[in-house]
Length: 255
Image (cartoon, rainbow, N blue to C red; front, side, top):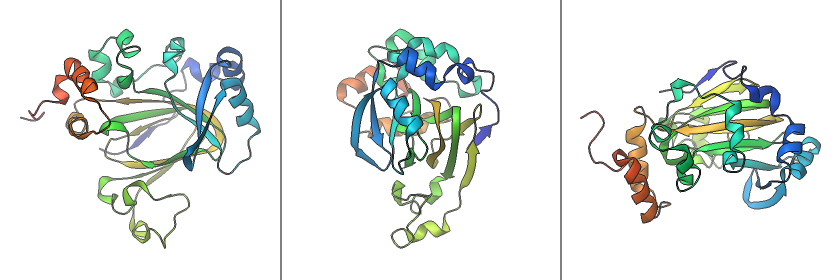
């Protein structure tokens, strides 16, 4: 499975015209976000959305604060009505667990986020959470993406490489890494398979939305991640097993 882009796949969403900086400032402005330095997640602060929007539109920093992985629907569930998820990204979790539970006892499995930030913000090289697939739609701004398949894990040094400004003395194997590169504009949707390392940077200030998902195509990957995860407590594992027993089953999907 390879990454792909759906040009204009979200262009008809209400969010494209509705989710402006002014809309966020006026309607969500009181809500406080945790924002992180792009290159140093230990450097973070809390800002109201109104304060952060002002920061974004005036920011000229080379390493700005970025609002990553904001589970927006916990506080503003109405925003979910402003976009439509393609059937191609069908999610076993959302089919199996009622939405009210995903917004309460199952927050761990909500897997729905808004990202927003200024120019030069972005995400370091990484694999997505628990081997889930992901789609990302740009609402405003412009993003640059790079992807590398699992065969290049050693070449990207388990995510330590900055593919946009590589240090070949520190990471010499990266010279031989062959990946995918693309630009994403408002209305475009990008699919990231669970197997692919990827890095993103914002070439313009903007807003995007991401949902991660589990289905038949990555069920075995997610199963292995869940079983080996040290981040899940025993209580959380019991909860997940109640609703999604196949994630802890030893039976393989193709048996």
